[in-house]
Image (cartoon, rainbow, N blue to C red; front, side, top):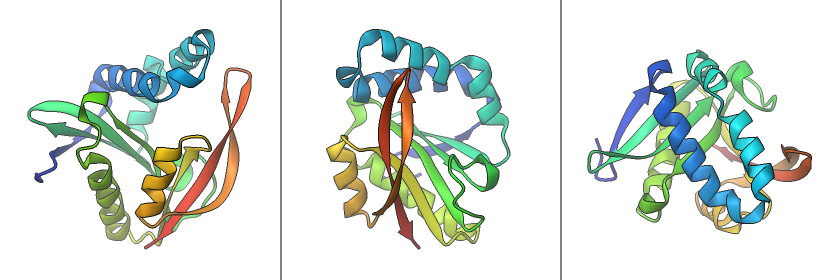
Length: 173
């Protein structure tokens, strides 16, 4: 427990709530920039029930809900080893998702979740944490830079047939 909220590790049984929060937060962040048909197709595929259940069951991935005032405010997804979406090596931890629901933004939860990721990385003898952020998501890029992340590359990300670019950012611990 922290003044910023309560962290709760989640598992396969929590897939429906995870799905709901994923769709809500992804739509809030990226909906204004993508046509509705592309968004609908992406959300249906990316957060499909069996896909989420496989992710939740993967021993190299960890999911945590962040709760504030007894309500789930968002979640954190971390990956190590082969669960990482890019081959960054065994000394790296990926922050694949920090999803904060709209009503809970700007309350320090994102910073707290990065601190959690750093602590877990250190406990697991990881030298680096990294993440991908959409090239046009200026608030997120500035947030991560403020926390010490530096751009180290980029990769393609597809929303339907629309190829988009994620900047890869890393922080050495």
